Amino acid sequence: MATESEGILMSQQEFFFVDNATGALRGSFVGSADEAAAHLVAEFAGGGVSIANEPPDAPAIAPVLSPVRFEWLLAYTGLDDVWEALMATLKETDRVAFATLKAQRAKTQFHLSVTLAVVDQYRDQVMALMPDAQISNADITAAWALAAEAQV
Image 1 (cartoon, rainbow, N blue to C red):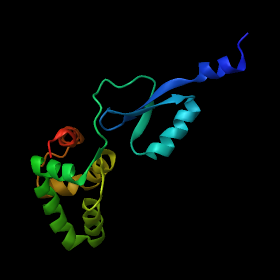
Image 2 (cartoon, helix red, strand yellow):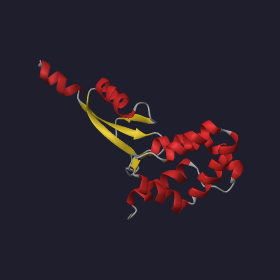
Image 3 (cartoon, rainbow, N blue to C red):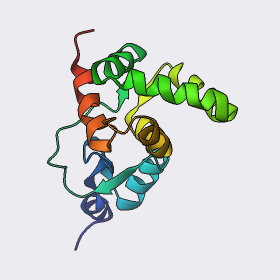
Image 4 (cartoon, rainbow, N blue to C red):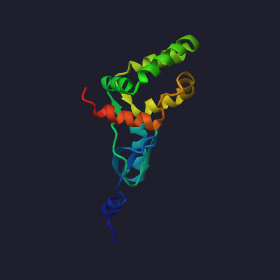
């Protein structure tokens, strides 16, 4: 007959938090399924992360970049030109979006999930301005991984 403490131990397992856009491991949690779900909400606030029972095969990507690394990413990829073109257009057509993006660029941390969401929001406008822009989620994520390791 199992004791209460054995029952608690049996309900404990490791859960993995996986970035929905990249498949990268964002963290893990040991506990019950309900505790892992609560941790997911508290830690990631529904930010494009899901729970898995097995770790992902994809290598982990740093989910946060400093402003210096984010600027490196923009310069390395040429997305600084894309950003400036979008900003110039928005300044004339949508002051709220212009102000929002200007504030985004002034942040002290850049989160991959937020960046991908912003790119998704403005993808059509960017492609209309610069049809050759490399702004797929895969392109951004690959550049993000390089920026996280850049010697800056």
